[in-house]
Length: 219
Image (cartoon, one colour):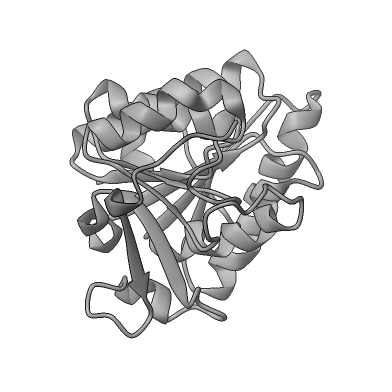
């Protein structure tokens, strides 16, 4: 879905600018430019990323919503990728507390993808959150953009929480970026018979911190 944006509302932050997020300068291949709609100040505040499956289960959706809400209550921002499923529930959970959330897009700011997140797009900006991308206006949501944008999600976050991920999942690409960036990775265990839990249970076995309550990730 394309929308008409007042271009004067879009902030363009270059890597040499003073307000460019310091956290992103330290990652491999930082974006040279960020296009920002909303509150750019939160890009330099403490955030936790919540990532996971697009076709999540009810269990995953409930946990994404609940943990995002609890994180926001502690005045910590929630960052995710604006996809359907876990990402969308994480943004919505943060907004329940009127918390600040950052959505990182794999397309231009004038394209809402998926289109079902139209109201979510508006609300994120209205309550003081931010929608950001490294892609200029008019850039379509190409498949290869989404793995690329995941380095920004992990780069801006202090910690990464994985809620449901298949064996080969975009969320696990974010995990790999996070590990390269020296970030702590957390995961909520899932049903061992569910395909959506293969990835999360595997990264726990490999050393991700197991999370069963908010105190496990925020203290």
